[in-house]
Length: 104
Image (cartoon, rainbow, N blue to C red; front, side, top):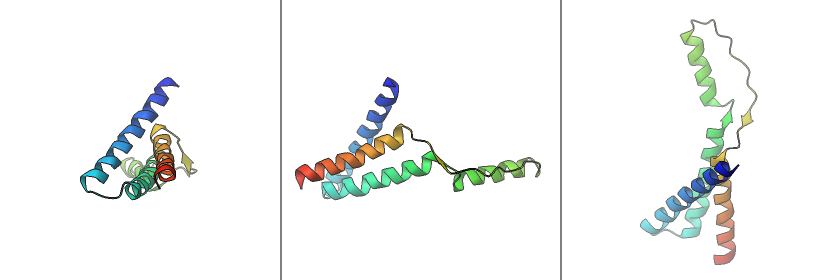
């Protein structure tokens, strides 16, 4: 559990660092950068943490082709693995809402 929380905090720190860096380097509005960046991170984490999507279907087709058609592809259910990247990205959105409440 301790390792998981440390991983979540590291992901959150990296995402916040990237968003603050983009905002200050390109002289963008911090809150709009935080909103669009954190939503983008959540969507990316959702795509990477889900199964049954385009990426896993392509891997099943590759296995089917490599075994000369003897592999029976499974019908996967759509599942979502909630890992540290997903939780850190959701926390990044919550940090945005906190900042918009206090700054705006």
